[in-house]
Image (tube, rainbow, N blue to C red; front, top):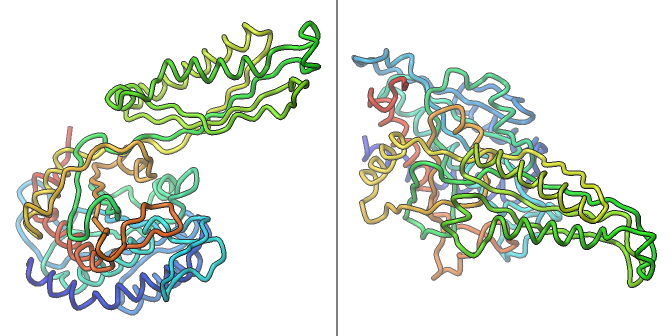
Length: 410
């Protein structure tokens, strides 16, 4: 089976590269992926792969059913359903790469690798469709819109009910932190939740030289930021990964030398790996802002926009995927990656379905391909896509053969 998949991944590699370059040249922002969806549908239709479209906007879910009948002691294999996911959307970034297939959409760029994710999942679909007589059960391929924009396409896909029958879900994401040919796994809580913090300190504004006629709105806002920073320090990675991370990126007072404004706006982000600590962090922000504002005769309005939950990798599934990847590659190419305070809407899936979200290395410093994601120079070593395409197929088929990894959990 491994050799068959390796051969198929080589066979489809030119097509996967062509798809990725087409998508890279014509990126579309979150929930605007109309042309991307049309390309996916054409590719699936050309191989007679059944799919549902227009899910959560432009989302597509393809379904490949295995035809091999094998005994299964725990569950009937024909009833097993797993999902593989790729995101489709691009970012509002002006590309500065000098490549033949650079973005032609002004100010829009695939700076996070979603073009590669989509192309690889299509390649995986082609392999699985060719090898459907080698496995039993059902594999759903989720082409998801809107990963980069709240509330996240993953939450809308789940709300649609199209994954209600799915027992496990796998996600693959490119990274510049690993070299091409390497794959990274992290078991347990992996990526942080992400919420947007908005605080408005309000009071009487007035002349800077007349403190009896105004409140200290700027001082109250500054103390709020300082006290919260002291409560959630950033100087110890172990501490903030345990308790949570809170950072402010906007402090807007809009006064001048001798004018104290009537309100000061604060904006920041909060990150945690634990849902209970996520609630505690929100409560502490609300309490601290109100207490500090009150000390200076002001009031505080706090609005925290709920973002993505943390990505939680199922330990048993992740261990299985890691061992399977080592079988497909070799042990030295399999890495354990650290927790990340960045967020991903794959967290919505992982909170509902046993999940494994792993990293595919795409960097090659010798080719000057090492820019970080979400930058105008981000690119990938496309050779990684041959590995990623085959690896997802290999993991999926091996999962369907293992009754313990797929069995219901307490």
